[in-house]
Length: 469
Image (cartoon, rainbow, N blue to C red; front, side, top):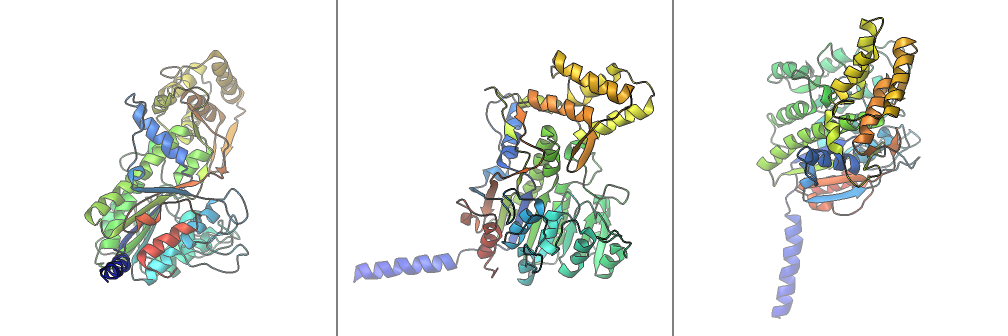
């Protein structure tokens, strides 16, 4: 009898203990676009190398107690794009490349976890370091047959009634997908109750009186993306500030909780360009945003869930390119992105009719470290000189095109030399089929402990929160 009573007690303890488990009230879903495990590993090795340590210095999210990995393939391809990858993370269903928030035939819209959170009474925020109408953020609030229908995607922002949007801006606020003139979206946003804030200063002016906010880059800034972290100045809007603004806005007059998606979008862009140092700086920039979420978790550890993942890996980056010794410390000699280096070379070309090789060499030395802290072989210098003569002497400018950039050939070749010296290699300028990493902490994080499909990630978040999704 005593044995039966003990078994019954144990059963009730397990059942009621599980049902009484704390559900997250505050959910951070943080996505490093293009951030495979090797982007993370390179960043951690790079940090250790700056102190001449043969180890890794972990990022805040790689210390989370739960970690696993997931597939990234789409319904149509072994290698996903950001639309299908973002949709999988947002709605828990795979679709074909290019489609946002819909089935592969683009007939049936899917409800994202952000809408489920809104229906559950939580405030919702969607943030990114690129444009708010880009594929990954769009997957959480829009339903379109093509990721390129930027006007139509942004128009759905109004229907979402989400509480906070943050990013660089919008790619096509005045023209529809047929390239026809269309009514500006900004008055529509305001009519729907959104306060438009431009830059960090603009947010601080607007936040007290605003109910719903759309935070963007300064009005005369780039609305396709924030500047690369490596190129940012003190007054430039950054992802950590956007995350801070979202947390502050979503917690104001709110005791129901919130769901916040944060995307580090330019890890993908720099990886497309095979720009290793800029990629490291973008991962560190994303890590700063995660630190903001983690600081919030430390205040409310029993009520907060943070999940960090990626939509896919970009570039097939490898740490190590032949030798056993890593020289990632050399990457720190790069002080600007490949795109900014291209601009510096273009400015030099425009400023003078006859530009000497030693002037170009000096630009490469100051901004990439070549010929100074980074040794350049005779063959490598001859190759750079040949490009210089074609571009600066014969004025036959060559370009190095990647998905989000059209850079100067001399800039891209200089970065390639640095990558090689810094023990980094790339498989391509596109996405790869690599598994995506997952890191989790907080209420419900224990669900992330084994290999899964990318579509499982939002489902597990919903289960942790007790939502029917």
